[in-house]
Length: 178
Image 1 (cartoon, rainbow, N blue to C red):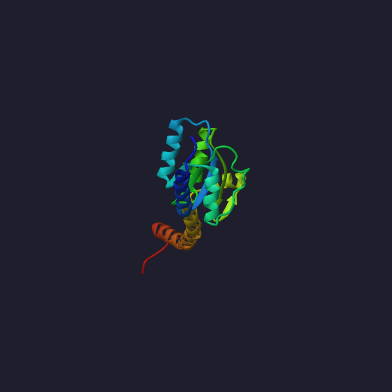
Image 2 (cartoon, one colour; image 1 turned 90 degrees about the vertical axis):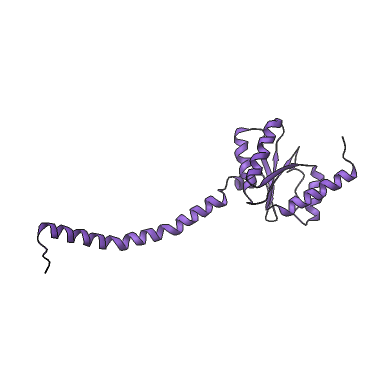
């Protein structure tokens, strides 16, 4: 059934709001998933602060154009396409979709928009395989901590050696306290 003009206007407004709120948008194929699988994917996305929306591609293009976002090529949006909006962490929706695609061959990331740039299929898939912000912060903290731990170890090593040597000398009786 074709959408009425009012229904299209409502969808366009919703898409514009989602585009403005999102930190990134990924496009994915999803055809062949059961209703249960789609519901499961949507709930996993929701847990990570992301959302999946299926809408008309022409409305998506109009919404992007009205928001001065880059135009997505028609060949990128071939066939039925779901939009994955990531609201809290720009990578969360892409990661959930990427992980879900490992168990469901019907799901495939085909492109996206991040920081005002259109991502082609390979860029979007690389983006989806990046570690999350939390993991990156942990790696960064480890990188900062590592030299400090090495420095503390180097400083305490001579003192520890001196204390051990003094202890051994005292035990052997060669060191006398005066």
